[in-house]
Image 1 (cartoon, rainbow, N blue to C red):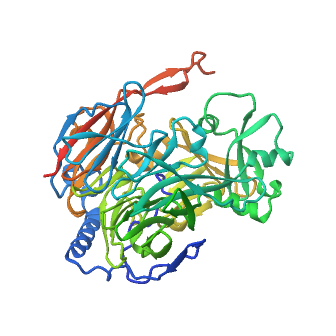
Image 2: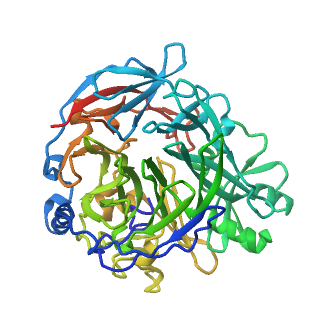
Image 3: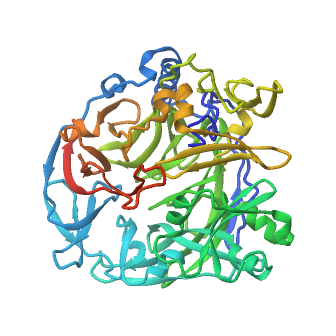
Length: 621
């Protein structure tokens, strides 16, 4: 919501500019070797016909974004420049919630359960004939590479919930799934400060020949509850269930040790104003602990493990977030989100020696949404800034980079690339600005007054400010550079628990609350962008393109003839077909508090949604 209300977004009007890509300084090649290269991957790097077409399309689309009505609430028909898919429902014969994978080489995998509850996976290369696929029975896979002579799969154990808090497991097969051997990650202990801990999970696996690469994301944090208990800052009979850092303050949510039921996140959402505030200085942190605390909310470590046997050793580590990879006859290609506006490509012929290239920041607008690969290692990267989405095609040599505006989508969900083209599910932006229109940053211009204060959007230009009306002076002024953060700045607190939204400003000197704006207050400026209709699900479209330039878009209910039902879809590309897994949801049912509230109005305490999963196939035009 911080992003929706004008903060936490990137400059959507930056254009590609020539120049050298930034060299990554955070690479830690241990024990493998890394060749760092400063490369030019901007507007002059691409000279192919397809590149020129993409650049021309980006220019015209950006112009349309700012000058035509199609940019504000455009329909799928208005947004389409290519053919749409025709869908037919089918029954894959699985039970339970099914998973969907594209192998990238023309095959599609569906996973679920047998009627007796056993894992069951099927695969097709033509969309018509399905056969059972034998995957390791010890895990529920979330990443597969089934394209080479050695297969690999990673996932969490069926019978060990602790895996999700530690590390997923990796299995390899040399006989196309008839037998599987677990490949152990040879994890070296990391240096952590007192009260520090690290959690890891395998996010992707890839193979090239007999070599296997596992991409592991590690998050480092502090055990705030234990630290504060040992410091005597909280009683022994309570536990910390969540914390947030606000400038020089840390806000900690507590509950009694005896309290049961509900996850930590549920508890935090149910008691958003019960945080206990401490000055960071009260925690008496060492320099190492303070760095861990400051990085915990936004920084992770990507670790690359590689090997050709039953053990995979760590060969590389770098700061990053989202990561994807692929293997082929030429080696490995890995895409890493290494910063808010930075994307890095790692390439290796053997999984041991790596070369890195960083994309020109002018092409990396918004935040990383996902990546998918062609068999030759060419990467397709999706990005979104909360209002617009972009598509980047990057060859594994780094010499050919093409960028295009994809559309007015606030975020992109599933993205798949294969012989049948590209397919994505996306949530369209709500861009109507009913009070005064917007500015070049995509923000509305307007004011909301409440309790002696006024929130002014567009003042300063591209920013937002809070004014004390009696004193006729600004209490806070945030420019575009501040609004790029995904977290509220010091003195601003946001609560969004799904049913209730509050944006609270505190006195910068005393910390006392000055004013709180609700969703209803902000609707005066943002209108449809702050839709409070009560639906739990965003509108979703599915799009298909043969080449990444011309797209055919369909609203999910229309594409699959679902009427007015809420629905969400994930998609996967095959040889000449696309498979869609569609969840169709019944209307939300709510249960009110039996005791009611003090003013006699029932309080919503529970919402339930039931849904069914349906499967569809479309042949490409």
